[in-house]
Every structure is written in structure tokens, then in C-alpha cells.
Image (cartoon, rainbow, N blue to C red; front, side):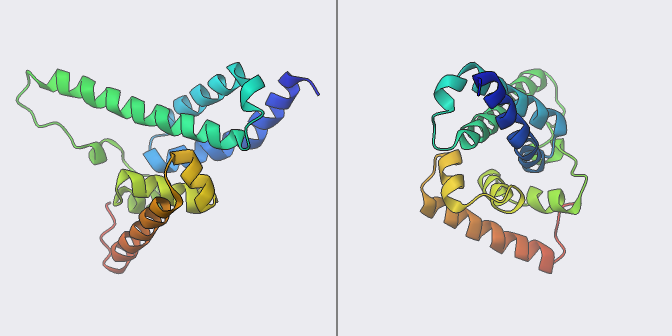
Amino acid sequence: MSPELEFEQFFLANYDSVLHALIVTTGDRERATDATQEAFIKAYSKWSKIRQYDSPAAWVRRIAINATRDSIRSERRRRRREQANRPEVVASHAELYVADSFTRDLLAGLTRRQREVATLFYIDDRSVSDIAYILRLNEGTVKFHLSEARDRLRQLIEHDEAPR
């Protein structure tokens, strides 16, 4: 099978799940789409090397997650520069994304790391070892963040504190 056809099959098999995980994590379809596309473009340009990895899909997810982080950081820096001369209060990061579902509202109540781990585990159906590989964490750290996310979600649901 040609490398182009092999990549096309890889892309078709993984694009939707990567995109969905990022949409849920960020709450921003446009940012998630951009990051997913960027990750797959990088994968295509390095396909001869990446195709030999144990989990090329995990590599793409890591690149996509990093791209969203970079985009958010860049936007924060730009916003700070713009607000430096204005007396108005800058909206918090959480206020920038309006969740369009109960799940996204709940996930907004988690820390960034908890949200990433919970999304990859529950939404993207990744194992703890996959998540550790994708986020470059050890498995114990993933389990810790997953446990913290569960506890926080339970509190939000029991006390109806989900951000609206």
C-alpha cells in the first residue's frame, strides 16, 4: 500500500475522534478544528517516520492538544497587550468559551489538566496508559487527575453547581 493511501486511511480513521476530543476540551469548535488540521498536516509531512510509532494517533493527539494550548496562550498574550492601555477588566479564560451542552458546562468546572484527562478518558475512550503517553505524564499522575476530575464532577452534579 502506498504511503499516501496509508495516511489517508489513518486520517479517516482518526480525524473525527481527535476533533471531538478537542472540541469538548476547549469548548471552541474553531480552535479545535484548526489544531486538529495542524496536527494532521504535521503528521502527513512526517508520515514516513510517524507511521512507525507504536501509536501514531497518540502522537497526533499530543500535537493537537499542544496546538490548542499554544493558541490559547497566544490569544491571552494578545489580549493582555490590547488591554494594557484600556481600563476595562479582561474576561477570564473560562468566560471566553460559552459551553453549548451540559457536558461542556460540567467540564468547564475542572482545571485544564483534569478536563484534558477526563475528555480523553470518557469522551475519547482512551486508556490511562494512552493518556499518559499523549499528555507526556506518568500513569499515576493521570490517575490522580482523573480521580480529582471525578470528585469535582460529582460535587458539581450533586450540588447543581455546573457553570451555566
